[in-house]
Image (cartoon, rainbow, N blue to C red; front, side, top):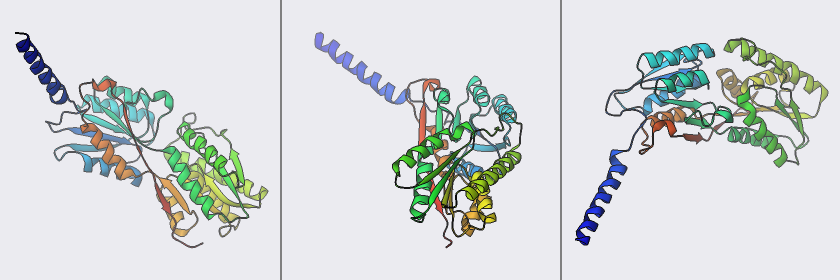
Length: 325
């Protein structure tokens, strides 16, 4: 009798384990039906965002569809789009710029939202459950290390960190660590977080870029005149690098000063192609899109999806100018 009870309990235990391993596994979306997703980004026509969209589409199942919707840098538009996605019955949303209200709209509507490309501040780590990001530390190290390798022995590097947007604070910290590592290199460190961000001044994306570029040009122009031994310039984002290239060209030092940065735009790519900027480290946008799409179908076991958190960190790519200076 005892053996029969023991045998019965063993069979029940095996069935329970099999049920937990198979029947209770869940994905963020229902893979048995045709799903409709939205990718909300600042500019659907810009190459970096269109590459993400292409990667997402390639990673989705054949019967699932993706709508790419532009917010054009306006948080209120992004929130309204996210709310509309909930109302219209979308099955999931991909967000590029972290907007807590847009994410909250998705959460309240019980549809999964995945953050792609840009990293929110640490205070949101528990709030943003699913993310595919580029390592900010790796971005800095790749571009700054390459600049140091290309620097003439008798020169110093101007490290220009004047962008006040909070998303770049990780780059700022990584930059300081890299400078400590290369104690033998002479650095001129410029940090000025006094500029007013577009969170305070209402600007569209073009106005913001123009302001940051103009301020970078003016400040770097002054720094070049005050420090004749500058042979390298590293900037914390690509817009600042464009301003730096203008300042270097106006000073007639294109052959003497090398510039490196982080980020990508078509204007920056033109400067890399012509040799005005030697390198940039940037996101692998297509691969990020692929990874983000795969997260929608990833199996998470029996835990409720609202309590699951997963972050995939992608290594950046280094784009180097092939043109001789």
